[in-house]
Image (tube, rainbow, N blue to C red; front, side, top):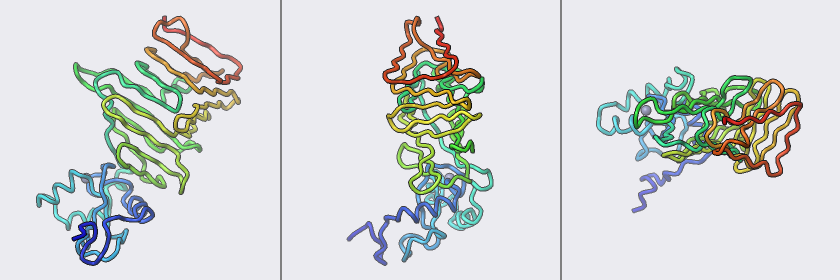
Length: 283
Ligand SMILES: [Zn+2]
């Protein structure tokens, strides 16, 4: 017997366009609790009785809430109620965890790689991406970040290892260890890949923050353009053991380089064209 199909011949596989409709209708998280690590669940009717994949009758449900339903601790009726008023639209966001472990995490944005760096990106004194050491022995490193789209609208923020994505996004998809936020079909505004215990990879960034454009794509160069037209293009930049990595200041960029025995910066074909470049070492 083919278990991938029900008695009506309906396949378990849901079309991508239908999945997106379900995600949008549920605000990109579990209808009960808002968790963004979910599965697609037929509620009314259940999959065994369904004849079509109707996006109005399928919900996002996280593993925890799904388990509660299976154990009879949460009713299908409650889930149906939640489906009409999904949690994410009440709170404004869906959420999920990042596990960056108890050893110094390695964080990558395109070609910009950091380890033992406290503030990876700072714009006019405000941290955009930062990592704090554990607050207690054997505790986790703590990551905070603010990620926006190319118009400056918030897409996702990371607060103490919990990421939150806004329900008014066009599409937020979590598949395996990757979060992808799209502005429209084929237009990826942000993609983050989590590789516990200690790696976090920003595969795609295309953001505007305080007038500064910051972008990277997969393993291609990271590009920063300031409102004054100052331009930083780095095709290989590794920073190790510094308080600050890429620091965008009023007149240009501050980058760690030279002197420090733990620092290394490889510019390769990088172009830096700005009025003032200040290269400092922690040493
Ligand atoms: Zn849930």
